[in-house]
Length: 303
Length: 257
Ligand SMILES: Cc1cc2nc3c(=O)[nH]c(=O)nc-3n(C[C@H](O)[C@H](O)[C@H](O)COP(=O)(O)OP(=O)(O)OC[C@H]3O[C@@H](n4cnc5c(N)ncnc54)[C@H](O)[C@@H]3O)c2cc1C
Ligand SMILES: Cc1cc2nc3c(=O)[nH]c(=O)nc-3n(C[C@H](O)[C@H](O)[C@H](O)COP(=O)(O)O)c2cc1C
Ligand code: FES
Image (cartoon, rainbow over all chains, first blue to last red; front, side, top):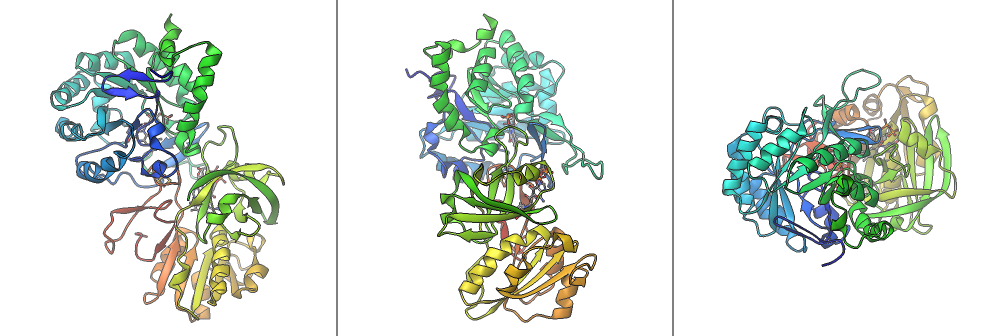
């Protein structure tokens, strides 16, 4: 047992650090920069049944200590992801968490059933929270009854554990967390982006072509920490926390609030080596805290 | 190969109104080609958060130096313009695929068309073309005289013509007006500038080979985030291209304009 390792349903993590979905593509670009086997896991870009071309540009806008995005679930579709993207990642010793998205329950079921058979996909992450798809995604994530039913349907077909990615764009995130747990979810990942808008200084119109976009980056960290803290108290399944992580201290914060592992999103754009850098920094942080193994700090805020 | 390096500022000066010329030293210069860009982190804090994509304007491999020319307009580029000689700048690069220099036939002529801050990458391109014995004609459009730059530098490489929107330098109007008037003879054209300029050029020389360099808002700069997508025309088999990793330079006819 190494100092940083973490065991989660389906996931044997060397360390608790993984790139967040949509911020790492399908790994290839970063695979040219460093050895992806260093990572705890990889959350790949959302996959849908058919090819999605996504939203018009501009799709991103910078904001104070953060950014808005409205990519719109662009991906090559299930077949291409399984035939060309996932096999590339097999050369690395790293578990893949497949982010699954769709517009109907049938979409989620179809992608989940097939993608969960890929040899390196060790868990699914149901994206019921993407703020950038009109109808579809968002309703699943904001209605506890629908969310629960979706999880039940996917659980029936998935060959690997199912994590559910929660949307912060709800009045009561604990209610949704409990609902997906009741539906049989093996874990929770949180948070997705917060719906926001930035206006052009000259025209007064939204900068992002889609109008709204999802806010991510350091600016959202306090919201994410609060939500992980609340959900940890209410459920018995593990949480993979994310939202604004840029360094080892942020990882400690998320795990203290109750996360068992931590995903890094936007920070990959600022520093493409951020994940391996954090992994390297962690042991020294644990030393400072007088902690032997990293799992000892999970949920320490609540003690 | 793409690398991240803390490059050192060796020179920085304002060469026109709000237009800065910044020379950086570092080993990633060895991998640079004309038309590629670098992704610059202007501050170690989260303000501003994202890197800024800037084209490579001049490559000096002997000295390990590369020059960029940029307009200090928003908060990121303004911070960059404050950097002093000796300061470190966090650079990711070189990124993207540059201009295909070999597309110009031996002993031939290349037309280089630039608009505003689209002109800088054409400087390294022009040097690379001239080094291969290719004649270059430069036709550049700017808003006003006070933002024009590099007239002397380009003039030593080939015929250089300026046009300004307000007529304060050269002809008054747009590059296409000047091209109509000059009727240059050439084999291949290369262009970089605002979208309306590229759009006008796309159909301007239907029988000529041409390469256009595009700009789009970026996140990662390396092809992972799908921020910088352009729709393609039906002349290609792809549905879309990424400006950062498939481009920024595309043969004309690839991107839907
Ligand atoms: C491949 C490429 C090459 C470029 N080469 C040059 C160059 O050689 N010289 C030069 O002056 N400019 C160049 N640009 C444009 C340059 O990236 C923007 O002017 C710059 O990012 C603006 O940053 P700011 O801090 O001034 O503005 P802000 O308003 O603070 O920028 C906010 C956000 O919008 C983005 N942004 C704003 N304008 C643009 C734009 N036109 N294109 C892409 N992103 C933008 C910024 O990167 C940042 O993420 C290039 C752009 C691309 C995509
Ligand atoms: C450009 C971009 C694309 C994203 N795409 C997805 C996606 O496809 N599926 C998903 O579940 N989350 C997606 N996200 C959300 C991130 O996975 C993450 O939940 C969020 O950005 C918060 O983390 P961060 O602040 O570290 O970026 C995306 C985020 C960004 C910035
Ligand atoms: S900027 Fe991320 S894919 Fe081009």
